[in-house]
Image (cartoon, rainbow, N blue to C red; front, top):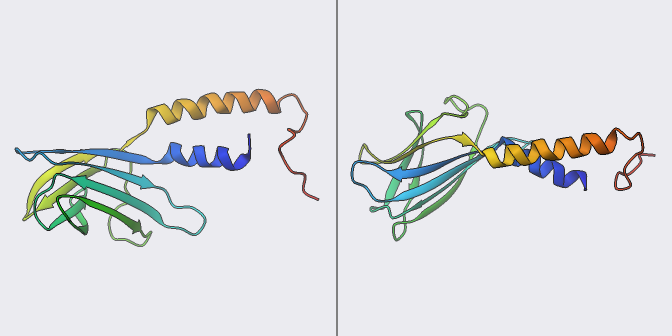
Length: 145
């Protein structure tokens, strides 16, 4: 298995995501994914909203306003960089996500790790450990030279 694929899977393991559900009678829904920083790229938030009335929705992480998402036909899809120098604390597992309109929370959720991805990584780590413990270099690893 190429090392690029292993890196890609390992990156998924560190991703955090949240499902956003309606509160106080609001019926909209959404999702948020936090991709960690890497290779000169800041952390990135991807947010999708559906079934939300109005023209804009404000995105909050632990009561800190992050951005305003424009809505079109009740939907929004926004990707935001999350710079290191941002005044807000770095999002982590358990961070509360709120979508607000006119000061009222309409959707909320909490960041969690993907348990299934963690299991896949653990299984792959065991397989690679067994493969590399034989002392022979794998055929798909290039020798530097």
